[in-house]
Length: 211
Length: 224
Image (cartoon, rainbow over all chains, first blue to last red; front, top):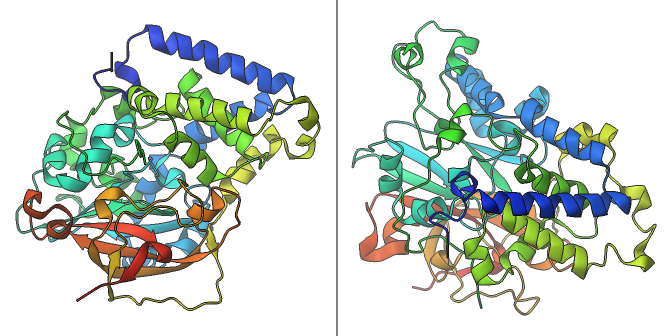
C-alpha cells in the first residue's frame, strides 16, 4: 500500500520508523566497527545543523538588507564576499544568489530533481520542501501552491520559480512588512520566517508577532 | 529510461504537506532519530571520497521506481547509501585500511562543513552563449558520456526555448563526475522559460516563468 504522502516522515505509520531505526542503527554500528565512521563525528554533524546554521542566518541577512541599502545592494549583486565575511558560507551554500521579491515579482524556489537548498543560510529543508507534491506542482501551478501557503498573488505580479538543478542555491529576500519603520536589525529578523526566504510566505508584521 | 525522481510538472493532486512539525523552524536534524542519523552517516562517509555528491544523487535516482515512490525522503537516502556501500565494496576485506587516513573526525567537522566544496572551475574554452541569447534545450536528452547515466535536465524542460539570464562560468559537469569521468567543467547558465512555453494551455499565467540552471551540453542554438 502506498502511503498517503510518502515523503512526509511525520505522517507515516508508527511501525515503519521503528523498522528504519533498527536498520539505520545496524548500518551505523557496522560502519563504526569497521572504523569507517567516527560516531562522535556524527554527533558533531547533528550539532552543526541543529545549532550552528539555520534560518536565523538567512533572517539576519534579510533584516540587515531592509535597514542598510548598501548591504542590500552588495548582497544582491555579489553575495559571496558578504557571506564569507559573516561566516555564512559552507557546504551547499558555495554559490548563493539572492532574489528580491517586490510587488511586481514574486520569486519561489524549488528543486524538482532532489531537494537542493541553501543549508548554511536556512538549515536543512522542511519536509514540505522535500515532498513529491511540492516538487511536482510548484513549477506547473505555483499560484495554487502559494495559495495553500496562504499567499494570493495578484494577476499582475509575475511569479518566477527557480528550479535549483545545479549547485547554485537561492535565497529569497522578502518584502519588508508595513509598520516596521525604525525597528532594529534584531527586531526585524524575528519577522523573517524560513518560508518567506523560500518564497512560500511573507515576512510577518509586528502585529502578527504579538498575537 | 526510468526517472522516478524527475517530478517537475508530474500530475499530483495532493495538497502540499505543510506540517505543524516544521513550524518550530529548527527542522532538519533536531533530534537524534534515524531521520537525523541517516543524513549524518551519508555526509560522514562521503568524506571517504569513495564517491561524490553527484554519485549519491545518481544512486537515489536509480532506486527501483516503486521503492522510490513508496519511500520517505530519508529512506531513499538510506537505500541508496546501502547500495553504494555494497557496490563500492566499502566493507570488503581487501579494502581494509584503504580509507584509514580519510575518516571524518569529530574535531574537523565544523571546519569542513563551513568550508564546503565549490563546484566552480576554470575552463579555457569560451562560452558558446551570452546573457540575453535565446537557446533551446535538447529534446529527449540522455547522458551523452555514459549510457543511462546521471543528468540534471528535467524532462519538463526538454526541447524548450528559453532566455539566458545569468552565466555562472564553468562548473563540474554532473553527467561526467557522477561516473568518475572527471570534473569535465562546462559553462553553466540560468535560463528563464516562460510558463506558456513549458506548459502550453495548462499554464496558470502567461507572465510567469521558471528558471533552471543548465550546463552547455544540454543546450543548442534555438531554431527559427
